[in-house]
Image (cartoon, rainbow, N blue to C red; front, side, top):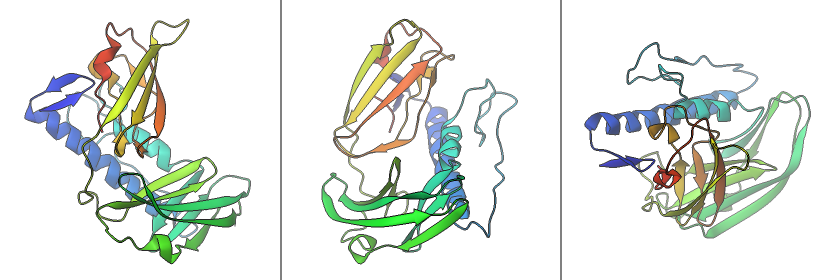
Length: 250
């Protein structure tokens, strides 16, 4: 049994759809991040496909009714002007903006329970339309347990969370979190949804369209460490019982 937005889905079709959504956005986002870290050798990507023409389980970013799938949010994130990409023992600062990108690069190796195992800070600068490659310091480059640790890279407001093992191998804990939902003042069809992680949450996603097809959320696929919170805005529909949004899907 799976649960999306409080609505149980016992069919194999729904479970298969969720797995396909996850596989699609993980693989496409990984590929685009990799290509962008090779700028100026690689200057773009082509994504197939954007949208469906009819109801179907597919690899599109937008379904046949115009609703955005998780892939759409992943594409928006990896096509941002500034991006941090970890690969081949280095972090790559991708700056596709027209101004330099400078500041203190923080690299933190965490246990999956959120505790800090090692941390490094480096002063960095990347010219406009360029990529800077920084070799990972030994303290964060190699984990003691690849299945139970992750690396967080942060520069200003941009951050990325990378696992040391392949997608299916990290020993992720069962998801535990708190959800607080409030209706926005002056707009009966807008809601503020705050999720606070009690354990590691990987690729947190809300699916309010399961309660009303017209409902949309502004953010998906957020990874949170224990104690971190994210606020999402849901708009487009009046939900009689917003409490059905919990538990969320991670």
